[in-house]
Length: 215
Image 1 (cartoon, rainbow, N blue to C red):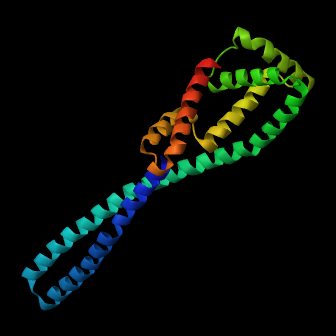
Image 2 (image 1 turned 90 degrees about the vertical axis):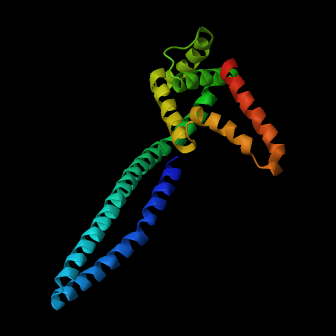
């Protein structure tokens, strides 16, 4: 979205360059003509030159005001993009360490079923801002919590780490909940020479929707 907006603003800004240059050249010509009329004491022509110069100057100011609006929008967009980049960079620095910790933690849990169920529950809680775990999830999460205690970490602190990882993924890959519908809609305009991939991708989104309801 930001890329589309940025390209649009750049195109708008570039459209002002030629008209502004032309009006500035015209201003110089009118000033030169006015000076000559004053020198010749041709007051009728002086009046006309002054009017033309005034009208042309108004057009220059109008172009400058329009350009200022676009420039301000470009500055605001640049600030948002820089802020987003700073957040992405800050989160990405720790995302890998959280993944590394998870690998070590998984080894301590031992039972793959317990690990996968606990991870699924925690990610679901964090991603969807759920207050509590379901009855079927509590036993798996409790077993993970026991392992966390051995490394002096509470379950709440671990949830915050998962939240950091989740937000980092969203910043890097985009918000999946917002883009899944868009991605599915884009399949309608998928290239004809890639139909073999389109069917598999359609199945992918069906499966993802089912996962949301089943798991």
